[in-house]
Length: 184
Image (cartoon, rainbow, N blue to C red):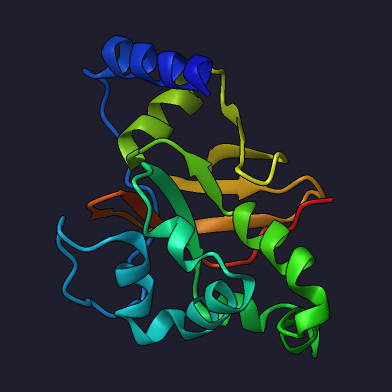
């Protein structure tokens, strides 16, 4: 993680004078009142767009973790992102016997450290168009830019677009994504 932080810091310094593409299109995500005093759980639980994620975090027992010191960067899938999964997937994952699998999927959406949209874009640009990062789950996500939108590609080749960026909190930052990313 320290190497990733160093790379991102160097990227930011070297590329700070570049024009930064906007991370994504305007989203339909409601504008809950987020402020730096709220933690990451407050951000997702404070919006009707993240009710599935909120239930999943509670079921997986990850609420206290995401209320911890961090810092964390969370790629937060909306309700419509969860709705893209095959029928019955969310209900199956929310069963107590699938807590471990649910936890692995959710921690695949979390990276240690606080990485703004600018940090991510700079890392992508300084890495010749794509940047790989290790999620808290231990699995890898690849970030790239397509049509001025940051795209996350999971280990299975599935893609998720970043819709809204830099939802700042007291213990990290969240970016809204349009699809659930899945580890292998």
